[in-house]
Length: 135
Image 1 (tube, rainbow, N blue to C red):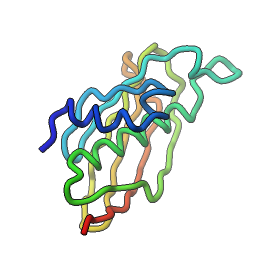
Image 2 (cartoon, rainbow, N blue to C red):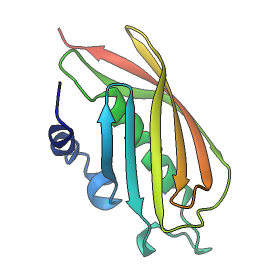
Image 3 (cartoon, rainbow, N blue to C red):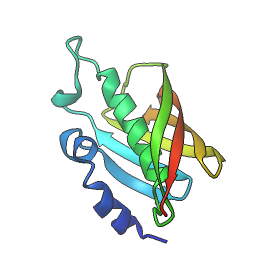
């Protein structure tokens, strides 16, 4: 099993999520991950609201961390995702929590909830992944 610090170190290689977007890993264990982001001007769209792609990136990153917490046997990549936007962010910090619903030999299925620090539900995402087993 990896430590949280080892997971964070590995996912620093996901430059878009961690470097460009600024997402941080708060918690990680097999089948679960929680990430966060402090909203700033780079995350805003022309209407001065958080860009939808930011919410999706957070959800996809949380999904990746939860699926790939311990990658000794396999690496999981996203097969498909569906996002439903529920509300605009009202706070200044966002969170995304990924939880496994089904984990099979070759595929996985997760739900990811995106919310702000005020408890506003921003988006719900369902994602399936393909597990590529190491030989």
